[in-house]
Image 1 (tube, rainbow, N blue to C red):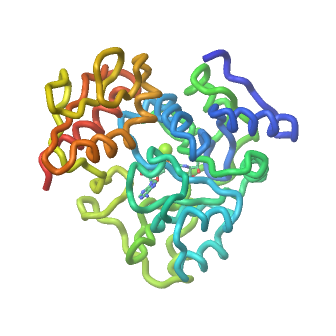
Image 2: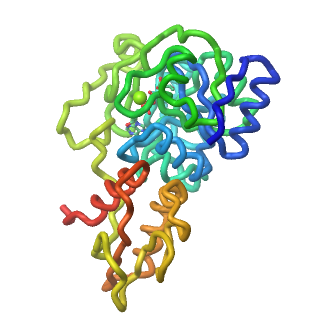
Length: 314
Ligand code: TXA
Ligand code: MG
């Protein structure tokens, strides 16, 4: 990756940023909460690049940033509570986790195969103009390396991600400075992460909100259990055996190949749909094997996902 461009938050800068995003590149941009690391939420290679740049060891689901409520409603199903909250707090530091619609076109890496999607409309004018010029949904986690604190200034982003992303739009310091409040609405309203909108203000509008309890059987940050696992048994770090559906990596015989050239970003982009395809090809009595994946960079997230897919079923 060449040097990371520093872009001004004016029209030429944002047009340039939108062009990079359309080409599948990654752009850090200011929101009212923290800087986000944006990529096209419909492009699996771009989304894999986000995980790669952050050095995330796992495929956690990402928030889909939208231009307006109409765009958000093309991805998620809004009930009365969601509509009321969106009307009151969007644009703003509130993320709603709602049931996902069929055939959204979002990359499976964005939702990590949950049946919900996290949606937010940021209030920062630079974020809004950028999403509008780009014209589609932006997947955007906080623009920091995994495990580091979230950035509230362009310089923080540069410290952590310079040389790993295409560009940073410098929009000055973020006003809110903490991440968005995340509210689960795929059942009783549940606070999944406290943040920029107060719980009391949410409760005033939709009534009592449950607090997420660690260990509860719920899909919450860091607690994501319900990932799709293939029905067929899966062997890891394997050479192909006759009769098996083999998921390859790098050169060599394979039924499906995550990346014939051994590129981890391409492999991550292909992982979720190839696991499903392998399961379909294997059928009810079949078996699947997967080639060894180097445990570096994105390979760690791929291996984490493969290990879950191979684990004994509950
Ligand atoms: O303020 C923010 O929300 C910032 C700015 C950039 O918008 N973004 C942010 O993203 O904090 P990130 O990836 O650092 O945190 C998103 C959280 C993760 O903990 C993730 O697990 C959770 O949202 N999340 C995303 N989709 C989810 C889902 N379907 N169900 C439950 N949690 C979800
Ligand atoms: Mg974060």
